[in-house]
Image: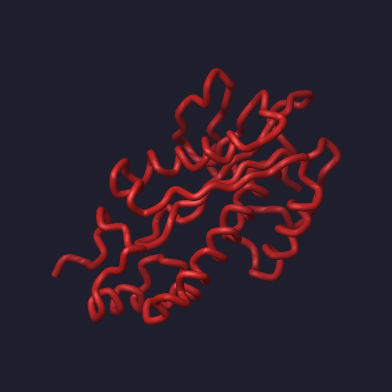
Length: 194
């Protein structure tokens, strides 16, 4: 069972992103404040869960969280400010939408920038240690997957409904055959060096 949060007695949010390593689509972050009595045995890093469990947990988190928010940073901004800065911006934008604002922020990973004067802690593999980071991981992934399924209808040849924009062989073969779309991150290496 994952720990609920780092600091008991504070309004604490967990935050995480999805889509950092993708060749196409936004980077998406979520921030979640869970009630102090929240617990669910399935809650874990979204990458460790089946699609069915992710979707069931998404519904539970949306219904039972004290507040939650999701934000996308789009491809043009990723290309302009780089993927690390875009990931942190997405987390800041998601946190900014929370009400109440958190007294403490638990961040998945090892990099973050101050969000005003709110104290924070980076936790490597935090989405497999803390429930609120895991919940943010699930909301970020499921929301981003929905976005990629929507744009898959515009460019079905890239298989985004299946690969979510990650650099699979099929995705790269489609880029080689059809070229990049406006949804591709032009600052990324879309094709391997010859």
